[in-house]
Amino acid sequence: MTSKAIQLNCHHCGALYHRVELEPGQWARCVRCHEVLENYSPFTPSAWLAIIISAIITFLVANGFTVATLSFQGSSQATTFLGAVSATWHAGYEEVAVLTGLVGFALPLLLLLVLAALFVPIVFGKAPFYFEAGLKLLGLVRPWCMVPVFLLGALVAIVKLVDLAQLDVGLGLYATGLSAVFFTALGKLHPEKVRLMAIDAGASVAAPEIEAAPSPGCLPKAWALLLAAAILYIPANALPVMIITAVSGTTGHTILGGVIELAQMGSWDIAAVVFIASVFVPLFKILLLAVLLWLTQRRRSTGLTQRTRLYRLVESIGHWSMLDVFVVILLVSLGQFGRLLDITPGGGAVAFGAVVVLTMLSAMSFDPRLSWRVAGHRRKVSVSDDQWAPPDQPIQDRPEQTVTATV
Image (cartoon, rainbow, N blue to C red; front, side, top):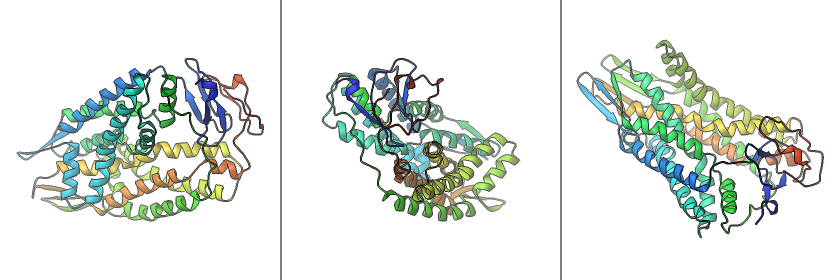
């Protein structure tokens, strides 16, 4: 099957294009909303398989070895990521334990296994019988893998504890750092990219299907999820996310209180990261999604390209809000010294985890193509060959033309 026989869908505005072969340094992007449809990849399926295998090894090391050890007044407490999840479960916060266990271990491991199962046959130019099911599972799992977020959460926890007692970093943290790099690279392997790589490798797989028209039914579901997230955002910030019991007494720490504490310790950079990820980003997502949904519901046709860019931003930053939840489970597992020091989760951690999940589900429920469709734009646009250019050569938006041709 030649590349020109394949049609590519723009998942953000609904435009439809014929695929052409790209040269090194080129990428293909939609002339209507500027979404990248495909970019030239120097990596062969064999290279991707090597990265996947390396990611599996480092991920197992990261979860099998100690992340950190805290020594406090003659006693020491070590933890792994799974140990932190277990400690949170035994502390009575099963919801937080299940959520962090899924996004930090179970789903990332499932992602690696699915990619390995897909790429081993692709390397030999074959398509496994489970290819379509594997791609569907890949699409479902991919947004929920948060190993890089856990790495940042571990660094924040270390900063919080380093002045409290002696803290020794374990092999698990270094392996987590390397795993985060691999997961960031593997994040580029969305289902359509894997399908196109299989086609280029000579595997007998179906070409990408033309997506059905967006349904207005996505709006009520997105609104309901967003409203629930907005309601829970209040207790997520008002209630303590963790409770510290020491000889001097018991204190509750909210998200904003943790930011202030980091700033008072002199860690302004870490305080800024936590504030952006745990306070600003969730509120920004809620407000921005509400605006995008309202404009679509009102059939507004202004600023469609800018609105599409903002939606892509919401998609890319949403999972970073899990930062503070990862910080809490690590502090809970390391801060277990009986009457001397005891750290437990608070109700705010449950509410905040729910806010993160609900805002991500709301963004996934909303179909950005609907904004273009209700404004009168359909699948077909016209472009000329010179509009497929390297990243440093911008293209012009021409949504008013209606003849299909591309790249």
